Image 1 (cartoon, rainbow, N blue to C red):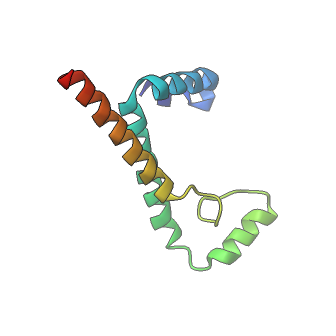
Image 2: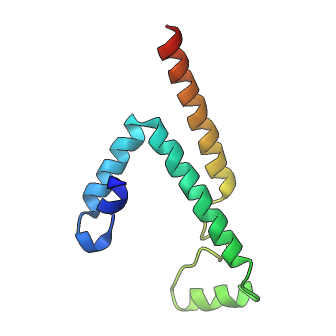
Image 3: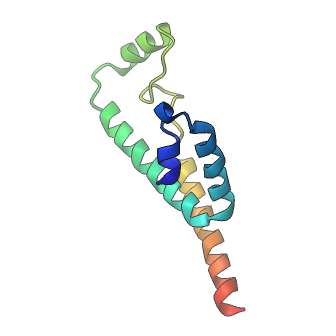
Length: 104
C-alpha cells in the first residue's frame, strides 16, 4: 500500500516509491508474489477490454501514428506466460525458505 501511494505522480515521491519497491522485492518474497498476481489480474482485465475493440489493427495504427502506446496493441503488453513463470519461481523460493525455517 505504501509503495502504491508513494508512486502517485502528483505527490512527487515517485523515486522514493521506486526505491522502496525494490527494497521490498529483494527482502520480501510475498511482496513479489502479490505484485505478480496483481500484474496478472491487470493484464487479464486489459485483454478482456481489448477483445471488445472491433478493428484492433486500425486502432493500433492510429495509436502509433500519434506516437502513443496502448496495451491492446501487439508488443505493448508483457506476456502473461512470463508473469506465471515468475509466480511459480517465487512460490518455489517461498517453499524453500519455509522448509528451511521450519525443518532446520
